[in-house]
Length: 186
Image (cartoon, rainbow, N blue to C red; front, side, top):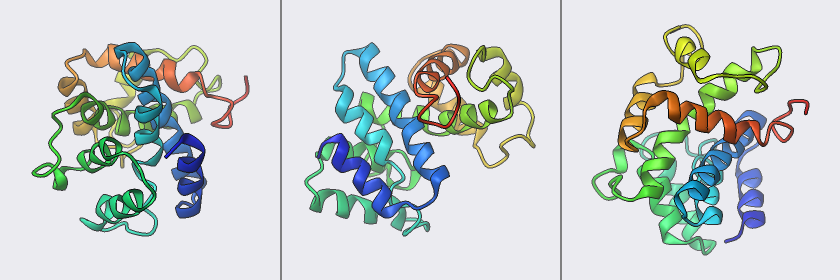
């Protein structure tokens, strides 16, 4: 499966613009880290793009990801990508542990990407001039982006063995690079 096929699958199953944007955010963060680590940028990006593609049709646990995995396999998606998607949720960890870089990083960027995007929405400059310390500060505001798991954000940074502020800075850079695709001015 290539990126175009992945995007077509995402938009076939996902009608929510917010969820499509989330896929784009996670894709960008995964591509960023793959580039830094010398990993397969296309595969890592595809795992980010598609990690929640089935959520609208299968929002309940454990159907979310498991039904999607069936669809991905039918469409010829690489098993490494399917495994990463399965590992991004806790209820699949017995069969898909976060024991590979692609699995660790997908988990690490998922919630954080959503949080950073939400923060950009309320800033006059969007991603421009956004600093890690402002995101750390916002993380302490429980009412802001309340649905985002702060626990997962902290656990993700720990899993990839990176200081949270550095991880945030990397994700800000990754998302800022696609800001026009996310609806922000250049």
